[in-house]
Length: 252
Image 1 (tube, rainbow, N blue to C red):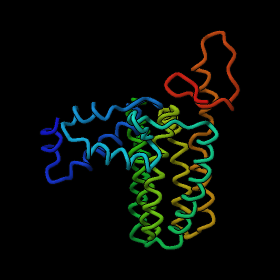
Image 2: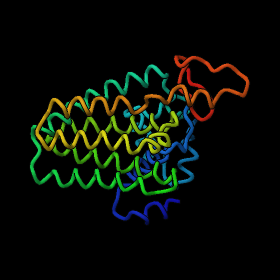
Image 3: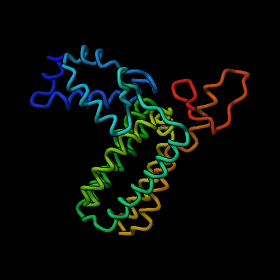
């Protein structure tokens, strides 16, 4: 794997390649929540030494996606339902401030990029395959928000937000939400339209409120339906406060 990993991306740092691959797997749910990631297995698969793997794990731990357990290895991070709600509440406020800054500081030339990002998400509605819509939405949604971040002209806010976006994508995927978000793609992109209209009209207050509402709504409504699928037929569904279901089991 070492030769193929390095040869596929010549000139790039090995540690970055390992990080990018592990992050992609975590953000798409390849590693179940709470599962152990063997450093030895990753080393063998990628054909690398321990150092680039541990460097990648430390960066992923700083983002909140994995937990390094001394004498044990690494585990995929797990969070309670309340922690997930708290995160999106905080994230919504943060992204709201970025949207407000974008509305106040954006250039006319930047509006075309935001329009294009919005249209590309709209085009996903033509796809018949739900899985393809889900993959497309996760990637293009991130692009839309990156375009908006650049409009804020604040490198500090953008850098902080990037880490939060990784955790957001991880949480949405692990609570089984990305497929359901793709089903509500039209409504989600309507939110994007409201936000871009506020930015176009240089209205920071509306941009802030619309963005905060958009982010906080990301996991809304996922808790109870997902929990129902985790309960055997004939059993009583647990109350929503018990947690989100992840890969067929409930997180306390």
